[in-house]
Image (cartoon, rainbow, N blue to C red):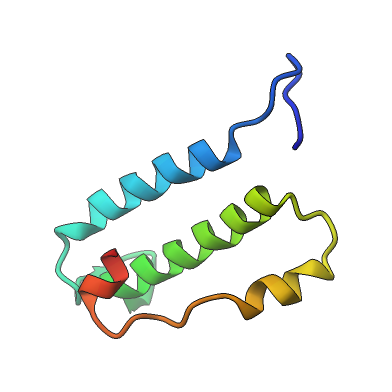
Length: 91
């Protein structure tokens, strides 16, 4: 695991977990069809799924300690499909 300048491990997974909890909290009460101003073609559920994918991607890299781009193909094969409802997105 990469280390900080002080020599301790960088808490990537802790940061991802905290950010994910904040994203979930912010989006849990939003209407599923609320528009995303910075991405006009997206609604709140699209944003929720996008953030879930991004957090999963970096979480897997940090947890597995991946450094070789060739490992991403195998990692992506284990990625879940988008849930069909809001409850699944928030799970």
